[in-house]
View 1 (cartoon, chains in turn green, cyan):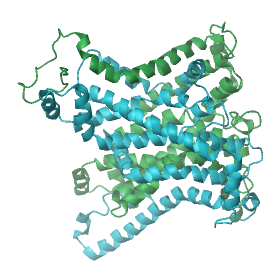
View 2 (tube, one colour):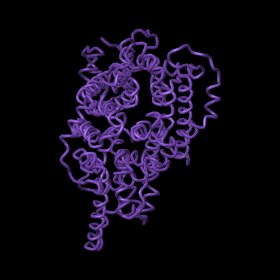
View 3 (spheres, rainbow over the protein chains, first blue to last red):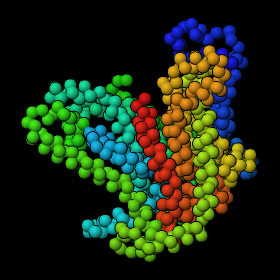
View 4 (spheres, one colour):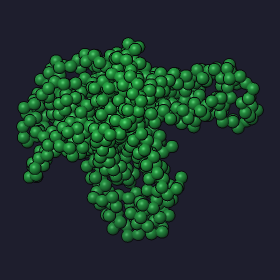
Length: 320
Length: 298
């Protein structure tokens, strides 16, 4: 029989001793430790040890087969001056910004609309969520054809209204716009559903009070809706940043047909080579495991910095 | 249309009190504008799917001609047979199904068990262990990719589905999610009562905890299955034998490796690969959509 105490004290104190007995041996908790152990064992083997190993690796030169050679800080020094890495940071941030800001705006508009729609709510939500369940590979293949220079739908539309065609997947900005459009398409509905859940927690009395005070819809949105949505907005922004800055599959699948040197090269002029693509290219194409590890730590640093900036921006008024 | 048309305050009953007819007209017009914009959004969401289906019924020559085809063609059969000639479609689909199902079952068991412990029991080191788990959220996959690859190679798992299943068998997100769910869903009185009846820890987990958190498990299960089905970066690296891959990797091979791409065939593959996922989503959509919101506003 298990004699482990509950966290929350039950209302009837007679059932349970008020606090765990401090003298009880740690061994008496073995069932609990056993129950949580699978995660920690897996984490140790495929999480913690790898992270430690990749730190070690970043100070060595290694092609994955031969012996390792101590390299000190030289790979990090090289990373700081590696223009390819810096341009991949630039690409990533541009694509992230092109995708994230329209996406958050559209998601908010959609959520507000869904919140005021009385009928067909379930059907709308289903339809808006659909792009998110589909695999990036399939979506990237489809968008590759939407943005194709020769037969793409976007160019056909441009032609129909008499504008010049754009070689979307062959020009630096075209590539970034195509990737960002794909991401916006895939994530707008997902985030709209999250915003909608947030909107539904705002008490109706607040809107009632605003109306009594004679606030217009725009005022109501900025004075009530937006401040109340701040935690949800922060959640969405942080998740979008962490995932957006690590984008890999979208550019990889979208651009692998136009890439000539490697499937991780990010298209013509490497315009779609994100940080993670660069990591894959260095590691698994060039077999430069040591430098790849240094690149991975560089990416980690960029993601952490951006997460902190996000946090600060959304919480800047010192609320919460 | 602008955002001001659709404020939540607009269509509420209080508005209609004075000048009833006029107000109803305005409300109605706004209602129409609202639904028109929402339907436009639905069309934008759905169009790429439609376009992919249409392309899968055309030959490459037709696809390359102007104007673009917006109605079904007659080459679906050709595209299908070319697809099955090019890749082992059903073999890779079976691999995906195997990996996604196994991982889902393991994740449901390990995550809910750990979550039960974190939600309802106290023990030495609980806070530290939980904080450690939350930090793991922050560790990016790239930091683990190289050593994971090296470890798997040493274990002889590279190229096999084991390399996908084992590291995914338990995860921090699922434990955190189930813990939040269990904290409120499982009443302490119920646990106390079962303990007085002499129920062991595993009996409490299986007979008291699990039955009340079924909806939470459904969300986690569908979410895990879809995530595994769609996973791409790690399988691309770990599955080194091109003849034994998951569906996403096979699709990607189809798109890139065969030189000049046969778009009709590639689209057919993309569409076929979506079908199982759409079925799973159609079954679980209600749960997923409801719980996704709950998770975010908690």
